[in-house]
Length: 156
Image (cartoon, rainbow, N blue to C red):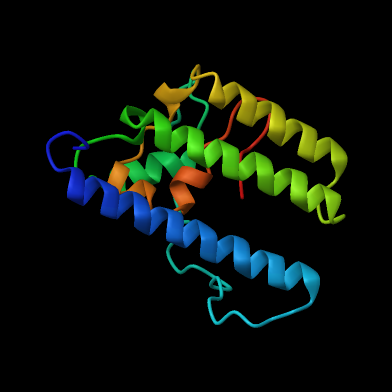
């Protein structure tokens, strides 16, 4: 898509970057006690965890949320794993957020180390195949952010 429709591709990337920025701003304001942002994450996402069990492959580094996303959001047919730069960007943001939250006292040092180690593993490129959700849906956040590694969930 980046080659065939670069204008669409870069608009999508810009939207994702904007949403990540909004989430980081909200979290920063919440942690510092300054609540200026009107962008509030929902208290509860209806239907985010539908009932019923799903089989997850033993080799997978993701869980049931990813399986549900694959079932519910087959939008473009292009998986996130095809966009290594996007996956790396997510890992850098998550690593930075973990380090900042640890420094602020909002995240235990052990969890920060586990998240950073998982992000480093992702940055090496060895886990790209596990980012299987649709690229368009991946920009929505939940399913992409719920893609864990065996050592630690990578949840922002």
